Amino acid sequence: MKILVINAGSSSLKYQLIDMENESVLAKGLCDRIGLDGKFVHNANGEKLELDHPMPNHAEAIKVVLSHLTDAKWGVIKDVSEIAAVGHRTVHGAETFVEATVMDDEKVNVLDGLAEFAPLHNPPAVTGIRACMEVMGKDVPQVTVYDTAFHYGMPKTAAIYPIPYEYYEKYGIRRYGFHGTSHGFVSEECAKLLGKDIKDLKIITCHLGNGSSITAVDGGKCVDTSMGFTPLAGFMMGTRCGDIDPAVAMFIMNKEGLTPDEMNNIMNKKSGALGVSGVSSDFRDLDAGAEEGNERCRLALDMFTYQVTKFIGSYAAAMGGVDAIVFTAGIGENNAAMREDIIKNFAFLGAAIDPEKNKKRGEACIVSTEDSKVKVCVIPTNEELAIARQTLAVISK
Ligand code: ADP
Image 1 (cartoon, rainbow, N blue to C red):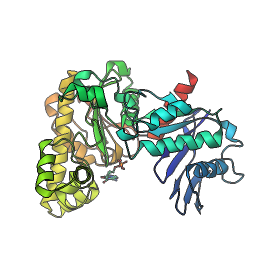
Image 2: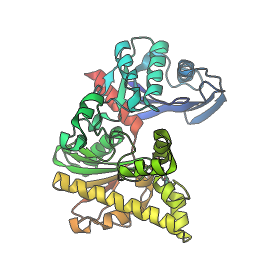
Image 3: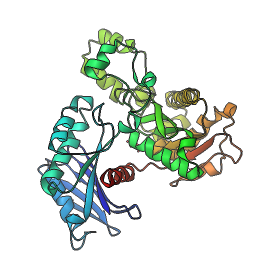
Image 4: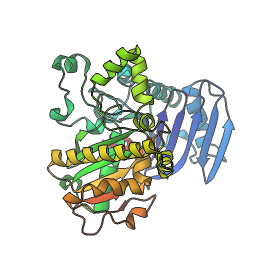
């Protein structure tokens, strides 16, 4: 059975066609500059095609994708009917869509109404779903898979903010959490790697990339996560501030005469590692800067290590223990020194990194010592595969 995974942005659309028999990627690519001049990249059969191809809207982009998936030279299937379902990466389901869902016209309209929860991400997903419905017809299930869904069942003690309860009731203001597809995927893969039933494990998953979040997974279920009502919350990221004293925002707005949008932009785009270092949001640049003696690059790196440590520690306490700590995403998968620095802080729990094992890259592996009381794993995330698995599960119900 073949599942097409779509990740639609405002002017782009990434796709992967996955064969679920062996979970292999048959083809993948990108439609970029939709609505502008249109660029198309398609990888299949070990070759890469790059084209200038006008795509006035997302429906035309989908047509370009489908025609190449079935093309004599570039195709990997004979007919579009071989696609069993489409899985759409969707950021925010709020409290309405709390699991992967087969969409129909009415549900798409409801999802459209949730735009204010993720103004940059939900509207393009809706556009992508409508485009697929238009081009592929009603017989192919269009399944939405949500970044928020994995976190939905967390206890109210973790989800509710200590502000007047009416704002939760009126506007749905609570912790939702993000990167849920990734946290769910790597926690499952961690259990497989350890040869244990996930129900018997307390896992802390650290998704450390440009955007970063940490989740406490007890028995396979999220019990707390660092991001909140928006992906600005938690610990410092490439350009986002994470949790700060909320009064700081009002203070700076008064001093600098800023509007809410301007302040929001500063906290999302100009803060975090970029704000502290003044150099870059990219951790490779920070490493290079620190190496050359730039103190603010060093400070940004040390702050990141410290804040990640605090979240891991608090989640170990929240779960009454931790069996495994998982690192994933750009920094988590690649930055061995950062992993070592973080895990050193958990010697008191009996956690220890094996420096040799910690050098491995690109595959799921255990990087802690044989006798480490807490297993430390590096697991490459694969959100497309996770979306395809959830899509398959929904249509198989
Ligand atoms: P996104 O959240 O945009 O998906 P990624 O998961 O790609 O981000 O993570 C980007 C971060 O990962 C950057 O800070 C980058 O420096 C870091 N990173 C990526 N590759 C490496 C590498 N080989 N070594 C160290 N850091 C890396």
